[in-house]
Structure formats: C-alpha cells, structure tokens
Image (cartoon, rainbow, N blue to C red; front, side, top):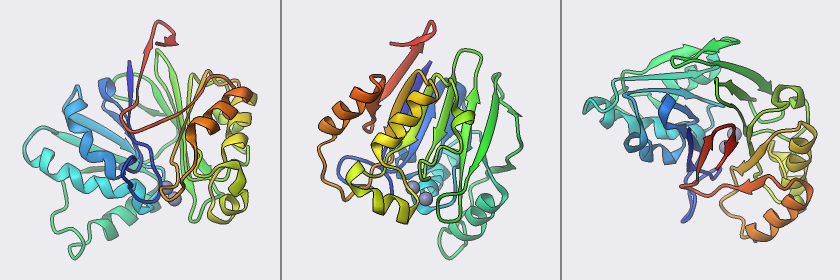
Length: 251
Ligand SMILES: [Zn+2]
Ligand SMILES: [Zn+2]
C-alpha cells in the first residue's frame, strides 16, 4: 500500500512545498486538501475520494476548489468531505461562498462520528486538538494492513499520546525547528525534537514530519540527523515522497 505526500508545507506554498495533502491512492483516502490537491486525481485508483479535514484554516482546505474540474469531467464520481461540523460549515459558507468561488462542487459533506467505518475496510478514529487557534482534529485510521495517525496544527502537548500509541505510521507537523519554540506556542504549532520524543514514547513504528513553515530557511538535513539521533525511524517529508507498506513493514 502506498502513502503519497502530495504537499508537505504549512501556511502558504513556496518553491519547494505546496500545503498539506496526504493520499492513500488504493483506498481513495486523503488527509487535508491544501494547495497540493491539484496533484491528487492522476494517482487515484478509484473514482471515489474521502477527504478528512483537520480544520478549516485556508492552507488545509483551499485545494477543495481544484476538484471541481475532475468532478465535472467525470474522473471523480463521488467526493466526501469529512470533518467536524464547524469545519464543514466554514468550507460551505466561506470557501464556497458565491463571491469567493462561483460553483460549488457536488461534494457529499459528512460530519465526523467516532469509529467511522471506511468503504474498503477499516475504521477512523479522531481526537480534538485544542492547542491551535479554533482547534484542529487528529485522525487515526486503522486499516486491516496498517494504522496511520495524522496530527497537524497543534502544539505538541502530549495530550494525544494514547491516541497515537503503537501506530505504524505517525504523520505529525513540525512547523518550527527547536530554536523557535516561543513562536510555536504563540501560533499553536510544534517543534521537531518534542514531536520526535513523543513518537518514541508512543512506540510508533515510523515518524514522518510535515507542515514546515514556508519562510524558514533551515538545514532540514541537519535537523533530520538530530531527530534520528533521538528516534532513528524519523524522516522529513518532501513533496512527492511516496512510502510503500508491504508485508508488515515500510520498504
Ligand atoms: Zn496549517
Ligand atoms: Zn491551522
């Protein structure tokens, strides 16, 4: 099973990163719909897509507008947009306000429920992340072959450790390097080392860091090396990263 990182940045796109979307093509599952959503359709193995939104900040929803054409062309037959009621309301009333975007794609809006069943098997669990302006939602998808947790736009406060415990793949934001902790707290985001330490404590199998601030010029290689000294199974995602999970491990 493939996991594709279509976009790995936060806030706004820069030359190397579009904003967040992570796709599981075989299952038609996507986390968030950032500016990278325009990349999704050619990878899909089905004509249905279920999109789980973390929250309604623009960098996580604006890409929903890119799905209008694939839907009108018939490449996508059904798109479900799933999230908390306040998130769906913001998308419907603001992003798709006629003065912002004139045609509302024919989405199926579904309010999150605990233990939602997935079309191709497996269950979705969610947790509220309160340490971000207006809050965010963390997800855990337990598929028959593997489990994936997606946690973004939150201070790494550890309140969700149990939720991510033992997961095969943790996708977690690391908006800032450790040196900008003050900014992380101010803006409701995480720094690298605290995320890596949490992943280690929660005994996750693999950690992929995402949602890096677009204005920061930092040496990601050096930061990754430092992160791997705490938890070796850590990587920093770049746009286009594709992970393959086969026979119980990542290839
Ligand atoms: Zn964000
Ligand atoms: Zn946000």
